[in-house]
Image (cartoon, rainbow, N blue to C red; front, side, top):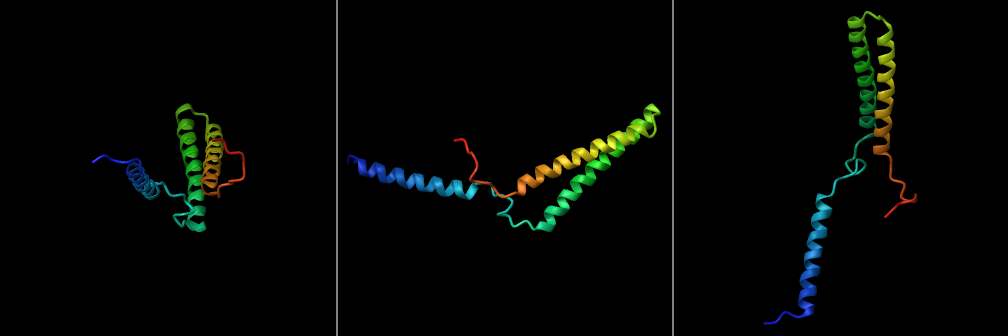
Length: 107
């Protein structure tokens, strides 16, 4: 039996429907869709800031002990850690921010 164009089109449409369903099921979820509460987001951001401060303080304290420059490297590295923590917090805030679909999107 010869397959007609309509049969091929019907098979192709069925395959495309299956693929679309599979893609929709496997698509990564946005954080808003995962129902993260605002409290969880706030604690995550606080933790990121404290981690940046702690790492900067620890590195500065260690370097001060090695080089004998107490307390200058500790102060500088703590400020760098604070800046890094703020940077990570801002990235997290952008990650949780709703998409602005009205802006210039390039296709």
